[in-house]
Amino acid sequence: MSTDPTHDAPAHFRHSYTKDRRQLLNRLRRIEGQARGLQRLVEEEAYCLDLLQQVEALTAAADQVGLLLLEDHLAGCLSHAIASGQGEPYVSELMAVVRRTMGRPPARPRKPASAWIGQQKGSAAGGNHDTPGKEYTEGQ
Image (cartoon, rainbow, N blue to C red; front, side, top):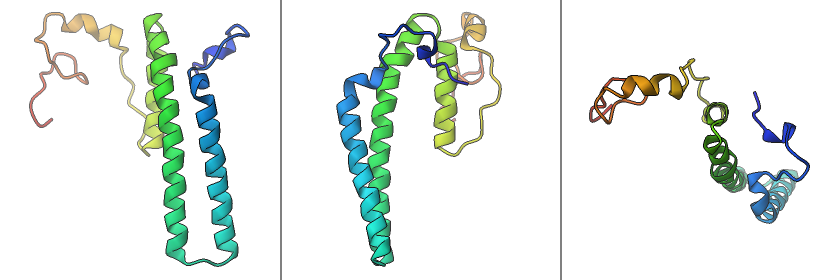
């Protein structure tokens, strides 16, 4: 499922990461160089741990790109969707991506937040967000 607003967006639509486009491209070019360096190390039959160190550096660089994109998506696309009353599918889509990234199974079907918010009006504040009306206790 993709809730990408550009499907129906006007031609002037910009993704929230557009403001960081230059920084993202620079980071991606560095990652590309790191990958070429790794390839060269393999061709030269470099020491295994030297390769692993470079793989870790490449992974960390890719993680930084992912975090920047996530921050931009939360601050731009998601917050705009929530403000316009269309947040639920964007939150679901984001959580699916986060679960896949973490190697976790898909979430169980849940009621939309709007379906159970009214149920909590009579319950005590601070209830468990996963189970409407269930109180949160320390260590859960």
